[in-house]
Image 1 (tube, rainbow, N blue to C red):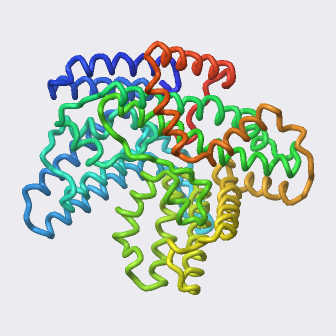
Image 2 (cartoon, rainbow, N blue to C red):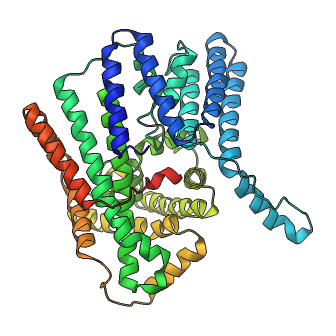
Length: 474
């Protein structure tokens, strides 16, 4: 059940009505959310939900152990056990076949036989996000940033809360779990803004992202030899915006849906393609993942507090592992490594100049050059991210280097959607907020008409077939 589908919107409306009918009673309102979350997940894949029951039960025992133990060694051992358990779970379901194939390739020349048949394990939807969220809660309890006084029921709901279970964002305990015991409230203005946010997400995903994907990205990446160099480059640019609009659209819908139940999720994007350097880009892109990697991997590795070579090593480690998190394919690790090298070069340049990151590129010219260079790196590395294999990515790069002009295969609709994507990305956030305020102040009947018109426009402009979220595969 895609969150851009009519069945999801009906499901959301029914859950909303039931929730607010019993919202003053904690057990009743949380039961509505948990039953709805289980139903939503089981529509996707019913059997893997049992994995989440076990994962939540194990981590719940870890959390209770942290609350009772005063021994630093025991507490650290409990945290390590939880991390190993969650990473092991993710590795088993997501990376087992990749490790098997890698071992087979490396050991075959030595005469060592490794299983040929894939394990064929069914990857639970949203497992990557769930494991990171589970780790963050246990670590936050260990650090004293989250309470351990929550029931298993609440712990399970925290992991499976349906607005974000499929593709994030990664939500900390302070933004969700700690709010379960508060009696929720929702003003007409907050409800209006939530609906506005959902509508924006639907337009991003169904109108702009899907048109770019079906109209240019998919055909070019399927057969790059049939297109000119200029069209291959345009497809890479279009995919860069498709990925952003697809994922930020999902995040908008998730944030808006959560707000309808009285929960405020953190923002996940902040116009990342206006970043002046790659550090700023990663502070603006998929911010819930970037902050997770910073707080639970980069800083524990030593962050910026170690020697310069160690700082560069920490950067590379985070980017390679962050890249590999996106998929069970070494090309994602390579993609992350390229970003790690680029970040290392940027950091080294700042060291040489004696410039602090916040002081970099302060002039208009420097900012413009920084934005152009950063966007170029992002676009070119996206080819590896999108292509089904490194060989396929190499073919696209070779095609680009031929210098063949011509954009005959880029339709007017694609040009229009790309222009909307670029202009929309450059508009100040205050403008979006102002439009949201205007929408909220409209009379309810007028708002309903606006939403209906948006729905009709989406139906007219979007693809005939519903396209799954790009990030769903990760």
